[in-house]
Amino acid sequence: MKKTLIACTLAGLFGLLQSLPAQAQILTVREQARVIDENLADRFDNLLPGMMEETGIDMWIVISREYNEDPVLKTMLPAEWLNARRRTILVFHRNPQTKNVERLAVARYDFGRNIKAAWDTQKFPDQWDALIDLVKQRNPQKIGINTSQHFAHADGLDHTEYQELVQKLPKDFKSRLVSAEALAIRWLETRTAREMQFYPQLINVTHKIIEEGFSEKVITPGITTSEDVVWWFRQKISDLGYETWFHPTVDIQRVDPKTEGAERSFAIKPKADVIQAGDLIHVDIGISYLRLNTDIQQHAYILKPGETKVPASIQSAFDKANRLQDILTMQFKTGKTGNQILAGALTQAKQEGIAASIYSHPIGYHGHAAGPAIGMWDNQGNVIGTGDQALRKNTAYSIELNASSMIPEWKKSIRIMLEEDAFFDGETVRYIDGRQKQIYPIPRPSSYVQ
Image (cartoon, rainbow, N blue to C red; front, side, top):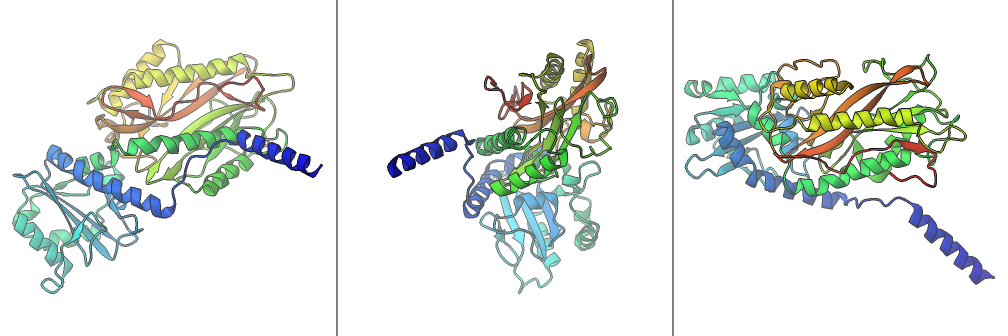
C-alpha cells in the first residue's frame, strides 16, 4: 500500500514537472559578470576601431562622476563596477597608422580588465592635467565628446565637466572638439554575433512569462483585476532573477461602450478593472538581463461560457496588425531614415485599408535605445532628429505599432497593439524569438495550438 502510494505520488510529481513551462538557464551573478566582461572585451577589440574610423574621430573622451554616469559609460562599466569612481575619465585613441585603438583610464586604478589606468598621480596630482598630457602626446585632430541635441544616450557629458574640460584644454585643441553623437549611437545600437546568441533567451523568457500570465493559472474572470496581473508580472520577473526596466501595463477592451477602445490616448494610464468573460486584454512588459533589454506587447481574450476560441472578428483584427508588422519590416533597408521607413509603411498600410499607427524604436542596451526612431505614438509625421537617423546593419528594433478595426458585434473599434523584438542584419529583418500570431484564449481549450 505504501509503495503504491509513493509510486502514485512520484508519478503525479513527474506529471506536474512535465506540465510546468521550461525555464531558461539563469546564470549566477558571478557567471553573468564573466559574460559581461568578455562581451565588453569583444566589443572593444572588434567594434570600436571600425566605428572610430567610420565616424572620423581620432580620440573619444568619456567623462563621468559617481552617481551621475554618462549612459555610454554605464555600458562600458566592468561587471564588478556598478558606478563610476569619483570622476572617471576614459580615453579611446585611434592610431591613424596602425588603426589600433588605445584604451586608457585617467583613474587611480584599472577600469576593469579592458582599460588600463594611465594617471601618474605623483607627476600629475590634478586629474585634468593628466588628461591634457595624454591629449598633447597623441595630438588628435578630432576629439569626440558626448554632447547631442536629439539623443540623450549620447549627451552624457554634464555641464560642469564640459566647462572644466574646455577650461583646461589648450587653445589649439579646443577647436578640435566635436560631438561624438554618431560614434556613441553606433556603439550603443550595434549588436554583436555573441550578443545575438544569448539575446533570444531573454526574449523567449519574456514570451513565456506573458504566456503564463495570460492564462487561467493567473486570471480568474470576475475576480482577478488588471492591476493584479500587472503585479503578478512584476513579481514573476523578480522571482526568476531578472529585472524590469519599466512598470508593466495591462489594459482591457470590451463590448461595453463606456470602456475605452481604439480612441484611448496613450497619455492616459489604463484604469484598474476586474477582468470579465469577453474581454480583450493587452500587456506591455520588458525585462533586462546581461545588460540587454526586451520590450513586448501581446494580447489575450477571455472566453465566454460556450466559446471555445477567440471570436473571428477579433482574430481578424489581430491579423491586420500582423500584416502591418510585415508592411513595416518590408521597408527596412540600410541607409533609409526612420522617417522614410515610417512614410513608406503608412502609405502601404493606407493602400491596404489598415488604420495604422507606427512607433517603433531601437532596442538593446536601453529599452528605448539609440538609433533611428520610426514614428512616435503622438507623431506620425516627420520626427525631427531621431527620425532622421539612418538604419544600419546588425541592429535590433522593437517593432511597435497598432491597427484599429471595427468589431461589428461590439459596435465600436478596437486597437490591436503589438510589439515584438527583431534583428536587422543589413538585408533582412527576423523576429528574434518569433511573434504572436494567435490571441491567447483564457482558459486554454484542450485543442489550443499556438
